[in-house]
Image 1 (tube, helix red, strand yellow):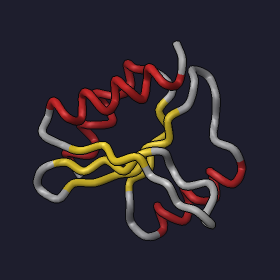
Image 2: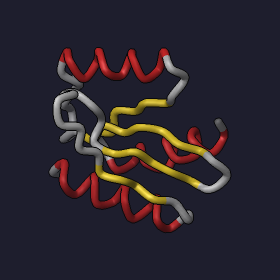
Image 3: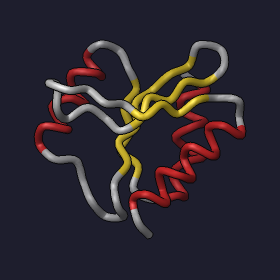
Image 4: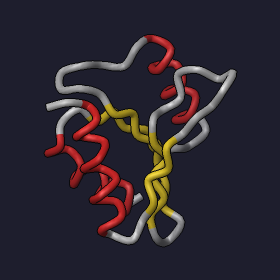
Length: 93
């Protein structure tokens, strides 16, 4: 499965539960996750979408650590089956 299909499914499932999956563009600040997930009740998290089996690059790992140090949830998504669990974790935060 391609990264694009996983990302499309993420956007759909977020929308289905009343949320928004914003595409992030951060010129001059490389390595930021692909999506900012905004859910009802002020729940939010960052998600980096990868092709199956792919992992974060070193700069992406650094950005993940920076965001987590600020108290944000950050996920790496590489299989459609992970989407439900990620969304439940965001909702429970």
